Image (cartoon, rainbow, N blue to C red; front, side, top):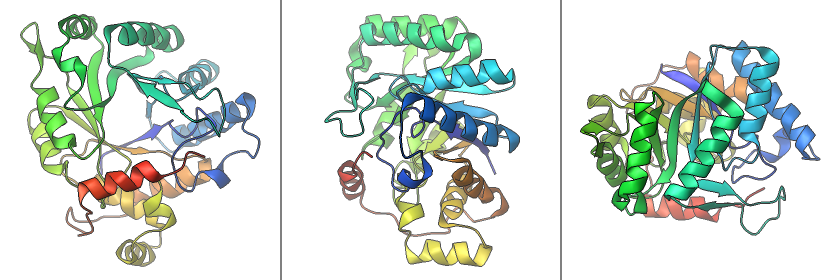
Length: 305
């Protein structure tokens, strides 16, 4: 079983497109309540042996909450990754018309890296381009690529996350990027779950090439926990765990997976997710994959709450 990481997408802002999140969070989601909820899940993760935490500039105040928690607890063995490219514009409103806006530009990178470093200092070991796609302007921006190369050369590892039906193309194109005669990125974070497996061969190639592979959205934004297919539900019953643990175990069973992210919104959800450690599945345990365009259209239709 690979490492588990706690992703803070659901804990740094009052709204997110994740089914099953609403009942796990405080009814009144002001900043203090969300900070307390975030710290409670971080405490549960640390107690359970999780030593990786993943944030992003667009996750509301996630970096701020994480920085406060690290300072309060004094933990020095937590491996922090964060992401730049999206900006949070939701104004701390659950009903905001737009919650985040993407821009892969030198100005956005420079500003957001400064913000991340200001909050988390040297705790950040991996800084990722958020939701890179194969048509991103990043690929044709020599000034941005040079700035990223400088950050890499300073000792901060660089990676990228992917989304959308052409993830595989993005993985291959991004891992072939070189700056100063060296590969720019050495980590990739992609969506893989039993409903969306299309990026799998590209992630296997990435792992073989020496990149670290993170799996995100293994629960399909909550779909596999809230309304799982009968096959997932049956496996859960057979193992005495929830469908969330089965879905995470299926991701962890992939031989190329180094780290699997949990997006738990409460300590109870996290503990249920981590029951995946007790489940041993073969890599081909399920044959449930949807056509990628259909999967991503369904994801886009989920409501932020």
